[in-house]
Length: 198
Image (cartoon, rainbow, N blue to C red; front, side):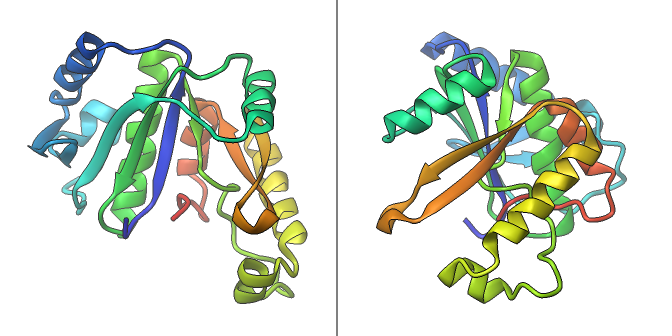
């Protein structure tokens, strides 16, 4: 994907009929382009009061939730209060400012409607501290803990429930992602540094 992505984690398993009803609901605000790709049509139906936002196609893909690392699954279930049964993956094909907002508003709407939490697919994306070089942090992990600390501090200031989930990536490196309640993401939408994980 060229743009940002999230996953909405839901406690209940979905059948084909759940997915069909979900697609009917989506069609109130979005137009189906092809398969799981949708275009924004009515932003106000998502609680987004924007005039003519410029957004690209959005992948909206419900699926069974699955994770390879049993420790990660246990940690997430303990933190969130439920083991997800379903996830709705949202991924933007483009990376404009409005695409980030479209993604966040859609995630919030889905999480509110179906009682879910939002997996940001990484730490809350705040700018790195001045002394941390992005390339060093991403490639070698130099300064990454300091960068994550900035994410945690911003989450605390936003208020609302959030959870930090550790996991081990390919190559054995330790990473984290944040899972947030929808109201916290709504507050993040108003923050001057707002953006989603790309």
